[in-house]
Length: 394
Image (cartoon, rainbow, N blue to C red):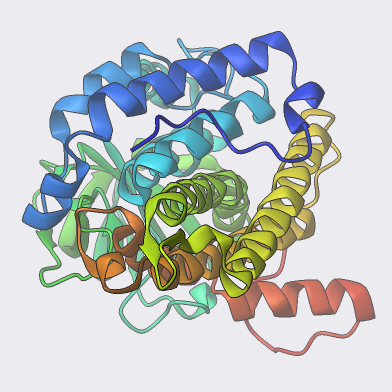
């Protein structure tokens, strides 16, 4: 297969700075060297590449767009380009980095005490500690306000009881950020893995994100000191702010998966011959599919870049991020399906990455706010009329 050199039909690279292109190239080379040769094996075996945790920390991938405590302090566009390249390798790898940075490091930096920041942020940034984000529950997915996990005050601490589901990094995390009802509001608690009453078990039989750890967390009379609470995080809005950070990265990451599928299908179509011994890339219906794919990828690139520029100026609203996540994941899934069709039966074999990306994107389509939830978020902003009564509002 021809080496990947990017997808840039509209000369979008001309809109990037030299530094942004350098960051992307660094991430691209890492993926080509450390991920692409092995990912199909990891996916087949359901194995997370734990040996890459440290090297990704050395490259500054964790919390790359955060400042202080050892973080790289990159721009949001640079951070997005890193996640684009990581998801070109695999959605599971990008998910790991997203959770570590956007869902664990970001809330500690934004809402944590100085003691919490000093204890956790340098270790998380270096990959010496792993974190997870415990918001979703078995009965509360799109409606986090329906959470049942409770944190009851007990002397100089809190006792947590509840269950969290579909938690990336859950069983390998050194610390879990658990959201729970406490004193008539919702608060975030940093729960170390060794806390008595805290346990995690992996979800088996996944057909998607197989190279990622997905777990169920259980808290049964898990006691933490008062200092485990994030002092600045009060109410559901704090948790949703964290999700906005993660969704931004997903909007870029999905582009990487789309590019991988497009590239694979294009090279295949130029070499695969049928009927009159001509490459199938010369057939009209196949060319229509490529025309659609490259148009949607180009539009998604511009959307990601513009939201990134807005975010770097402090102008990106959570609704902008909803548009980014909703559009780019949808088009990535459509590109993956079209690419699978072009490869025919070969499209379902893991000799090629397309079916793996397609399966992964089915999960990405759902997590961090389903496609339909983001539709309603946009609909409310446009019309001024909410179409739901109790889901995500910021």
